[in-house]
Length: 294
Image (cartoon, rainbow, N blue to C red; front, side, top):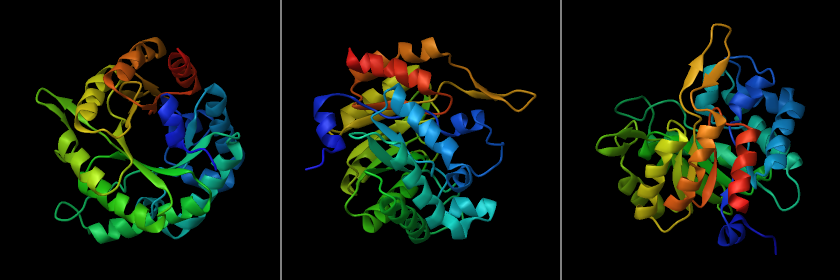
């Protein structure tokens, strides 16, 4: 019987990868280019980034398919290539994965809003995410991660679509929160307890947060998730806030040492799955792997 990510979770903290988009940009992806096209045009580069994370200590890498739903791809005129680009994303990551390591099919937000704020229905979101999940499953991912969701309703539509199209795969969900004096809220005003209750009911098997917050701010959010759920809690913080230099280079406000200083705090607060988000790289993952070993 194949070992699953849940077998590993019973033994220790599971380590995901760090930022993918920022790493691809470092390898020459021009600003404004659809990253998913590199699964077909530059698969060697994408595979190399995945491999660098596995070498640094990641147990799981996420596919280069964050913006791979047809609604998001439509901004680049690529909506009809959704299946092709997601299938390629899964296969590239699978080729990079050593035996005993895992590949998560990444499913990011559409970038659009549901009615009445936007033009889309929940059924349309569900269909788009279902198409993406089906292609990632066909390409050989071990699980799906619906991530960086700022609207609980969209996250639920994604979860329904994913579970319908790929019923054999476990689905993890991370939302993105801002920190306020009254606590943590998504862009659409969703709280942690409300989000946890709804996503658990819909069948998510691990829950948490990624993006927006730095590693220090993420500690309190992990604590809030731990208080609200018995499921594995995921934490993937940004390396602070991004800034764009005059020559188009993106840098982040939180340095490596400051970032990793709060990793033990996240673990103490109850994170079972950790990794990095924007601005983190294999160096961050290598240091996080050291904490997990300790």
